[in-house]
Image (cartoon, rainbow, N blue to C red; front, side):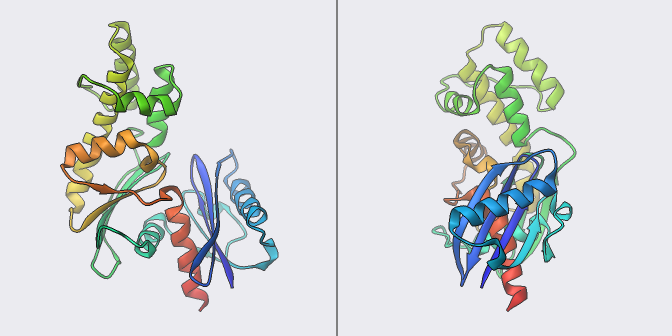
Length: 260
């Protein structure tokens, strides 16, 4: 039986195809202005690229901020539950994962997991843009760098400077001021990542740091952010091979369990 999990995010939409306990296809595409259409497109394209007929998909679970705007799903699940299921399915090389950090385009979540894999405490930053993927992308553009160069330059910074604000509006002004003072872009990039890490770390401490730390979502693909978090927490963070599709995977697992 083939089932699908569709994660409709603010910046990207993801699909995972699942059969007999194995992932048989996955895809990430940019989200358009209409979340429902993005959800349908990522599912159809994932099926096509995986050699699966859309009509052969017997169950679909939707998740993400646009989960209720996709009108073709059989089940709706929150990102927090889906994330926990996806991470729980992962063959972790670091032992029991007790805390999940999920940095997406629109919000940041920290989820505590009980020993049985169920969700315990969690914290969300959804009212402020700081600490999200879009915030980092905005400041990369302000520096005149591609996102990839922004991350690489942060990793090669040799001088740590302090940013005083992580408010999206004031941070942009601060970056302009630093550029006017001819501060090296690499050092500004590193300071931005460190400021974001300093904003996320209190969320992690509120939830607790039991077990291993796992970083998922699009933000987990940013090696400079991973490094900044590890340095601020003084702990190693595990990043799965496919962190961006972890929530879609969890949605697929949820509908799979429901249909047994």
